[in-house]
Length: 396
Image (cartoon, rainbow, N blue to C red; front, side, top):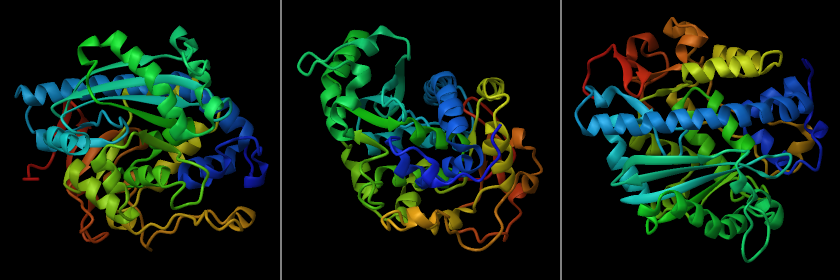
């Protein structure tokens, strides 16, 4: 296992997402400790093919089942129950807000295919498609890394689906060119929704991995803004991930400042209550098993989560590194700047690192002054989807 102080210059220049790495606080910190070979050649490919696939499959199942049970009145406390958004399946969404929030952001009906690209080979890793009706997630399907569909060729341009990005070298062009092929796949699998509006979400693998190891919902929303604003705000060559075409409401929100975007989207997801990320138990065990012998578990989970997470008011005022200044790549001053003050740790919640990843909803908002309350006393519920335990019976 590597244990060094690796530099930005040690990353190979032919790695297309090299300039984006400092934009992810987690990926950059992991790289500095583990180095290129262990992180990008061993850990991330292994995690992506074996873990991302299972994570998204599990999350979409739970999202659909939770939404169905809430609408049918089968489960109680929907206002204290967190579930996954279907677009994208990396953000928490309070169950009672699902239908209204999703209709506002995406309209009445939508099919979206996530097109996951590997950073080193620049190839399609897998496809993940979700379908929403009247703001409610109702169906999904996945095309895995070994599926022959990835070998399907574009009738006009001739490239294989898995090689689409290498053909265009541009996220937007790639999305528009693969849309015809992806629509055909969608229509073959779910012909009943052949006339539904359609959208492609292009995602680099490194752009997706960071969401698995981040605890705070407020931080994850900021990460979405960073990836989309990579070109416009940070001067990077292209998006790190993007919807093509953009749903109009989502596009409008993304033109807000980083802090305002976090605040608006957090309001739609949880009425600005702090939510902590959830890693499903089966996926947690898979993560430990697959990455045994690497430094990922120690540094990405144990060390990072032990350091804790910012208060929402801190996240709103965070200042990312100014990647438009080319000199910053020489000095490697990629530090994120947060307001002064101690972060919340698992110890403050009287939990272990393993316990905190069950998913937590807290009655803490951007208006809560840090340490004006005891975080443990503000826990509303622990758990995810259909399996939660309520600790604080308040009106949210």
